Image (cartoon, rainbow, N blue to C red; front, top):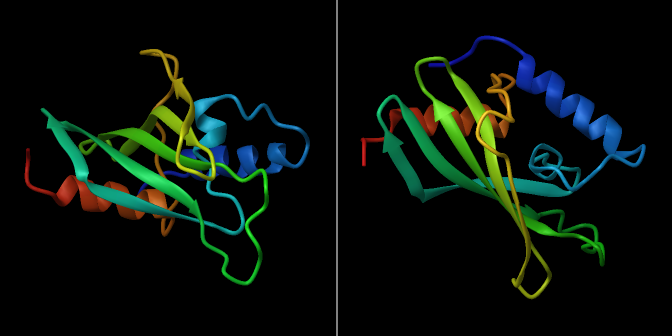
Amino acid sequence: MCNNGIRLATALALASALHAYGQDENTPDAMAVIQQGEAGSLLYDSVRAFGAKKRFEASILWADSGVQRPADHLTRKVRYMADCGACTLTVVAVGVYDRSGQLLKSLISPPGAADPATPAPGSPQARWLEQVCETVKR
């Protein structure tokens, strides 16, 4: 369905590279990046339609069973706005949770502060965008 552009791929690659160099992890875009050892999954019940746009959430959890979860690992729930016509995603907010599932903080992108980006082909975000845009309007 949507397979154009590489802006999100570039942004995610840059964010991953900056992580190793002390990136500011207190931004929604930085916290939305799926790091090595993690996996993201679309939360289907969160999909809501707003005209040509849809809002949805994805969770990012520790998934590497071969490596013990780092003590400082934080689980995140990322809220996206999908523009199905333009095939773009915008990170709207991120909830950060500790090991016990307690909400530590919420990071919100003010309206107009984040640019929509096209996810990299084959990325989890590209799959989520396609799945969300194919769902029945709710």
